Length: 205
Image (cartoon, rainbow, N blue to C red; front, side, top):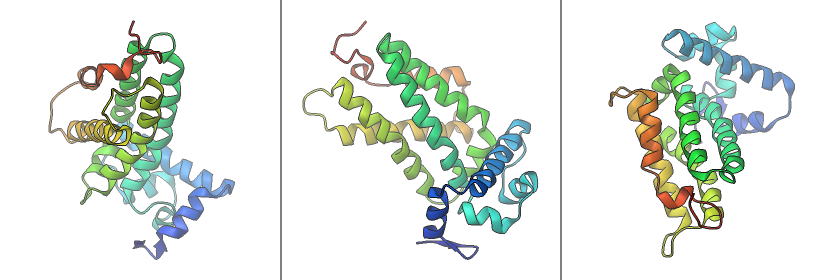
């Protein structure tokens, strides 16, 4: 358990799971601050976030351990929403649904690029692991629906795919690769196993 600014992970977890509208409003102000800073291209730091949101540093650390956790909490609902939309669209055109899902993910990361750049610059691999875990769950659900080829373990495949996606996005926002959003989205789509974007009955369009 970490303890940042006198606030334990258990306290943050309880606050995150709380239905207190005041806590939700504070988190939303910090999310909006991160989006505003990213929109202007300004560096995203705790100091910049609290200044933009009009809250104190102690308030920030009551909700988030660092900028990385804030970024994680912002991308989690996006991942869930993308997965839900893709599940609905897959019934009509699984290939287009997979392509659209990658486009939406890349667009989100690109829109808050400064935030994710700051987050991925943090030491350690905790954020990478957390984002991979957030992504592998809906991927595993997707694989259960479409069915994995014989001999492939759903958990191993979902970890591999999620890890590859997060690493490529990390390298991209950190400017380790030079590509526009369309190119990144196209590669994420093209590099997905083709059996992952087939109809649930196993036939492709």
